[in-house]
Amino acid sequence: MKKTVIIGIICGLVLSGSLIYVLYDDTSLRYNVGTLVGVKDKPQILDDNFVISEVIVGIESVTALTFIENDILFLEKESGKIRHIQNGILVDEPLWDFQVKQEGCNCYTESGLLGITSVDSYVYVYVTEELNHDEPNVENRIYKFTWKDNKLQNPLLLHILPADELVHHGGALVSDLDENVFATVGDQNLETSIQNYDNDIIADAGIILRVGYDQNFKSPSASMNPLDHYYAIGIRNSFGLAVDPITGYLWDTENGPAVYDEINLVFPKFNSGWAKILGPSNEIVSLKHTSDFSYSDPEFSWELTVAPTGISFVDEKWDKYQNSLFVGDCKGGNLYRFELNDSRDEFIFENPDLQDLVLNELDDNEEIVFGKGFGCITDLEYSSDGYLYVISYLNNGAIYKIHPK
Image (cartoon, rainbow, N blue to C red; front, side, top):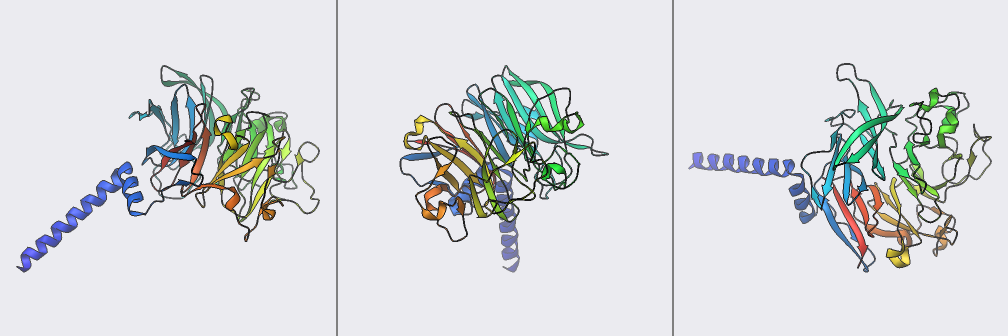
């Protein structure tokens, strides 16, 4: 009898272990079980006139996506793979496989396959690439691919950028109405004049980069006039860029250390103020490059950090929200909506607590929360057919799409 009980216990443990292995190994199954039992949040939209649906679930470390023709390309940050959704189905074989920094490492890092955007038949990719296993040489690189016959072809290396730290690599990419491409490069904890330190050191970090501005220089800091390559400086770290389809204005999200995350309207030669200014400035502060770059206060700030990431505009297909800017965060899993004024360069709020353009610790954020329960949002992208795509990075990952009923 005792022997039978022991055998039963062993069989039960083996079966349980097998089930755990199956769940762990199958990311899609793990996602669905997680949402069913409440381990993973199921996102919701707070406006009943909108619908949210799953595009794909159970994908690991997904960071960014772009649209090309009628397809979707997305990135797996930690594996280095560019994946392809064709006719709504995930293609088994990756389009490209980079050797990314610390691939397979169970440690915290913000490096990897970070950003992607497309312009016509070209695809731009931002990646922290490990070039040699034996004596690792790690660089942040921006490549330009040609999209042809459902393949990424002819990779052209446009930029070699610093990759000195585990954090603050940025990586967001976007194109404007004239098809110019921009990239965020985090400060990587460097202390140079580009971060408004009182020295003459210049490094290609803490910037919004004009991608391909002068293809004779893959590293702008090696050129005679590095500042010409920078659209903005004084950026601590940014995971989000968007271009207003009506005005052409560039906007970004920026992460603070423990206080004052920001949304900024970014004009050419903008100085975001880091590391001298966080959030709105209540005093005149001397900044290193004030003669070349101009500072202005954020259009909105969070006093306590929420880690804003993806940022996107919509259009007339979203009716009453067509004059809104949408922002996701990674800390609370919220999707925010900000109403724009008529000139689309400031936000409008009904709540008096928000009219100082800061969400303070005790302020109510109900007016600006459009959706919640997304886990960690890493990207927002609006498609031409009226869907807002949302990437949820954590808890086995998912891509959702939102649209009016």
